[in-house]
Amino acid sequence: MHPEARDRPAEAPVEWHIASILVHLRPERSPDVRAAVAALGDVEVHAEERGRMVVTVEGPHEGRIADRMTAIHLMPGVMSAVMVFHHAEPMAARTAEEVATARR
Image (cartoon, rainbow, N blue to C red; front, side, top):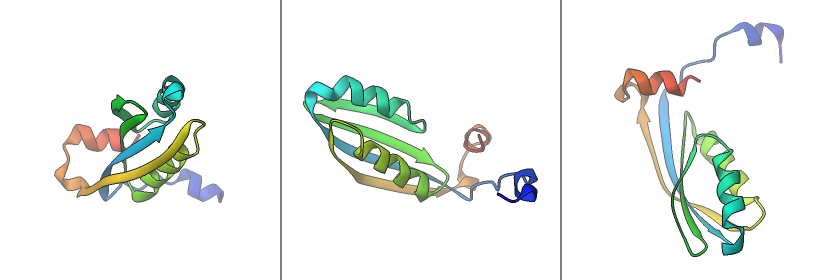
């Protein structure tokens, strides 16, 4: 990275993305997968039942969503991770608190 690039503040995101991912996994690996998903950051497990898990991912761009989905798909015990919902909204529609959290 060029030294001047490190000194520039990160650009504020223009949009905020939220996606839901359906994860199929080996039921016996559920505790390990849940812990690994929680460790990713920007990810929350909402439901889990008999080898299926519903996860949401939030981030400033589609790339963050794709990175998290790929990481989940590659976890031991996971058979598939498929996006079932994706929503993007302008940052202008978010509250000041939500915008501050997005910049972290």
